[in-house]
Image 1 (cartoon, rainbow, N blue to C red):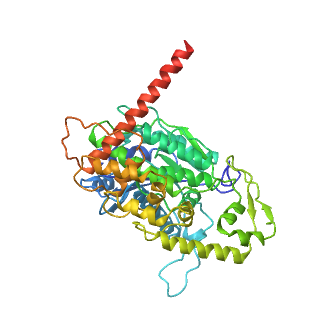
Image 2 (cartoon, rainbow, N blue to C red; image 1 turned 90 degrees about the vertical axis):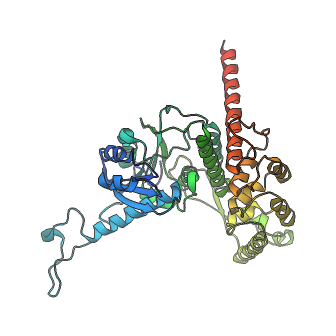
Image 3 (cartoon, rainbow, N blue to C red; image 1 turned 90 degrees about the horizontal axis):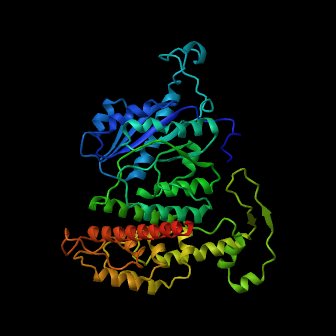
Length: 465
C-alpha cells in the first residue's frame, strides 16, 4: 500500500482511455466501442502515431477524441500525448464549469458589461481522471480491462497492470520478458510476472511521478521502476484481454529486436545505487582522501517510514555545503570529459557516476572502432562500458553486412556476445542489412533461451519421476 492508496481521501472517480494506434483502421472501432463499455470510463482518446491508413477517420467516427502525430514517434510519445490531451480536456471542462454546472447554483452574479454568468471554478473540487492505456488491436476484449479500473477507483491501487492469458500465436518473447523482469527486480526488489504488459490503469499522481518516460518499447519497464521507487502501490491483476501476437517471421524478429533494444536502454537509464546504500558512500566516492580525513562523523537522520510494501529503512546524510559544491564541480568536469565520446546528448548525474572509473581515451578509441554510424545515446554508452568492446568490434566487422550498423543494432548485439554467430536461413542471401542480421541475433537468443527452458523442464520432470 502506498501514500496514494486506500487511506487517501481523494481517489479518481472517472477514467480516460488512451489508445496509441498505428495503422489499426480495421480494429480500432471495435476497440473503442468495447472500451466505452467499461464502468467509469467517460472519455476515449486515440493517438494516431503516424498511420498511413484511415485509423484517425475511423476513430473519430467511433466517437473518440483523436490527435495525430504526423510521423511515427513511438509508443511512449503516443502515451504522453494522450495524457496531455486528457489534462487539456479537463482544464477546458473546469473553465466551463463542468458537466454539473448550473447557473442558479454555481455561477457568480451577472455583472454589467459581461455577456453572461461566470462559473465559479474550484480546482480542488474534482480529482483528475485515472488513465487507462489500451492496445488498439484488442477489439471486443477491451472491456475485460474492467478489473484494472476497479482496482484503481475502488481498492486504492496506484498502477494496475493487466496479467494477460496466453495469446494465440505468441512466440519467442522470452528473452525480452526475462531481461525486463530481472532488471525490474534488481532495481526495486519486486519481480513482475508480465513486465511488458502495456495495458495499465494509472492515477495521474503516479503518472506524473514517472515522467519523463523512457522512449519506445522501454516505457513499461520504466513506468514500473519509477512507480515502485516513488512508493506507489503497483499490482498485477488478471484480465481476459487478447490482441495480435508477434510471430516468428522476419517482421516478428525485428519487433522483438526493437523491444529488446528499448528495454535494455530503459534499464540503463534507470541504473542507480541500491536503495539501502547510504549517501555517505556517495560522499566518499566524491571526496579525496585528504579531504575526507578532516570531516567529522556525518549526522544521520532516519527517513520517515512510508506505508509502501516495497520500502526499506534508509538514512540521509548531512554533507557540508562546501563538499557538495566541490563534488558538483568535479562531476561537471567529468561530464565535460565524457562529452568527447561519440554521444548524442548530455550525461545525467547517475550516468556520469556510472562511468566514473572509465578510461575515457581508451573507451573512446574502442567505441570509434565499431562499424557504427551516428552517435550513441548516453544510456547506451553506460551499457557499452560493461561490454568487451574488442569482441564486439570483431563480431560487427566479421558480420556478413555491407552497411554500417545503427547504434541500437550494436546495443542489441552487445547484449548477446556470448552467443555464436547466427545461422543465415536459405531465404536470406548475403550481404544482409543491419536490421536482418540483428533480427537473426535476437532469434538465436530466443532459441537458446527456449532450449534452456525446455532442458530445465525436462530435468524437473525427471526429478519428479
